[in-house]
Image (cartoon, rainbow, N blue to C red; front, top):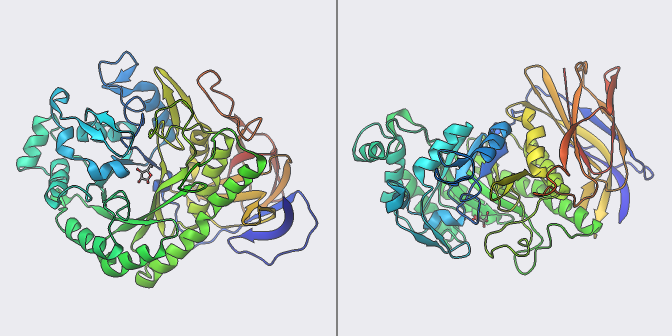
Length: 512
Ligand code: AHR
């Protein structure tokens, strides 16, 4: 792998021809006009897929696994700790085959269906609307409902919104019969999912009209304000965003974008655990490519919406590896290593830089599927390295973004991916600064000099996430291989903080 040095950062300066070096500088550039990092960037996604819902979140009230009204107690506690701001449900591809009326009323009488998207598993609908909204209330998350456009009707979606949010009328009565007196609060409403693919294989021109029609009948009852989200592009499909903004932009509050860190959509995606150093760096490079992708989607949105009224919502992102050998095909169960943690941290850093347009992001998915927060097996649960990144990044939620300028060596991977040795992000909330630093280098530690841009650097506290190897992971027999630890490798002198970062580590520092 070739290494060379240049400067990167928000206010990028010209390349500097320095020799290979492990000295990295970060400068905080507090900017009065910088946006707040919406806490919704730390959003989650739960789909009826594999054991995300059943076994992961929900075991039912009669289960021997400790639970609170059917929700696993261990997972519930872990999610409360994470401060999940928003939870998207019921899919994904599943959403466009989901008929909400099948998931209400007496669970014993709910119809069953085949989950055609995900392994042909039989879905018994025991987790439905009431169970989802009650879960959101328990963990303090805003619900984000993904509506069925592909195989549902306008009437079905309209009535779902009414069932959830109306004070009176037949749908409100039905909700009351099912045990919920007061309406729930519903803000985020997705009108279809991946409408270019599993959500109906629409063209953008056709879907734009369908979107306009469906959203018309999603009414706002009793002052409940809906934030309506159009199904957006996948990765590099800039035409989708263009057509949607042109034809339907004024009818939406947000449009989604899906970007997975994946090696390709056909054939093997690579092992979650068994990878080379070069695979590791390539993965980080692919993950960072989300920045220019978002940039281009934002530029298109700017053409139609210069005031940035419409949000870009990255409502599916994360790593996608081959399914764990021995697990059920189509259930997308994968292990989660320090490499995944790096992807999480680098992605969140990117989202921060687009906080003026990117108003939400939902990692896929919350439990047992793809880049999960928690993995469960019977009555056991482990917290993944990715969980710990979300935990250590909590201070950035709803904090004011501080642009940073980073001067770092850059690695050139296989000629087509560039990975900085150090990446950084910073924010300020209630007088408290939070700086997160990522050292991607698998072998070398690095000294990072952070000029604090006027902050005193008092009451410095740090946390570090690292592991013995890039593929270190937490499993049921060894749950603490990659875990958060207090970090004492930073000191402040004359407005400059010096941080001694070990190789392959993520550090978060808070100070005043
Ligand atoms: O997250 C898994 C799947 O990925 C979702 O169901 C779909 O929207 C996407 O293709």
